[in-house]
Length: 46
Image (cartoon, rainbow, N blue to C red):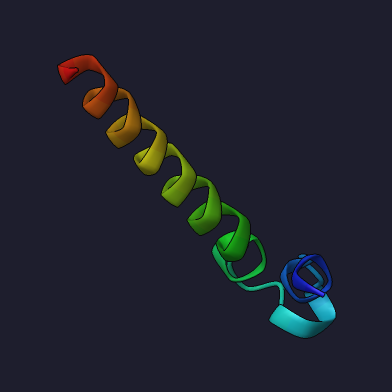
């Protein structure tokens, strides 16, 4: 269901701006990258 809701469809999100369609994927990827960087920094301190 998450993939279905996040799927970039122009009919649902409009075609005005790319970030309306791809925002869910970009936001999720940004969170994962930030968390991986944090995890790597915590492992580096041990």
